[in-house]
Length: 113
Image 1 (tube, rainbow, N blue to C red):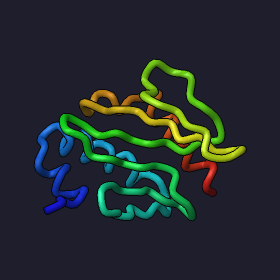
Image 2: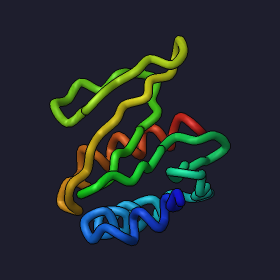
Image 3: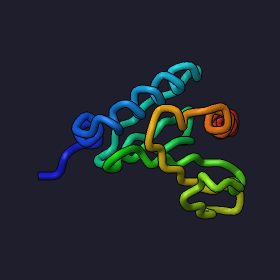
Image 4: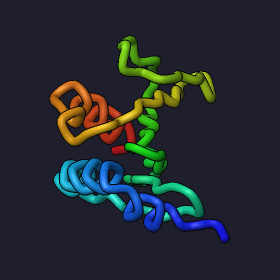
């Protein structure tokens, strides 16, 4: 039987730790809605700007921006439309939620306002 995204996160101590730290950061953004999907979470402010995907040993996050991020941290970047990029970053620990990542998340949030 398939497990929900929340069950997968709760079942992995590293994923759980990263998720809690990320949720704290997201809670500081006004008007965001955490939407649980079948295998992931979307964070929306009008439209989704952040995807949270459970992985063994961490979380894969998808930051939706109008540009491709230029960083060694980017696991994969995909242009999904003329002005929209999905930038995937793997987080293996709460310390990876740093100033750089916060800046990218805030930028994605700002594009939805």
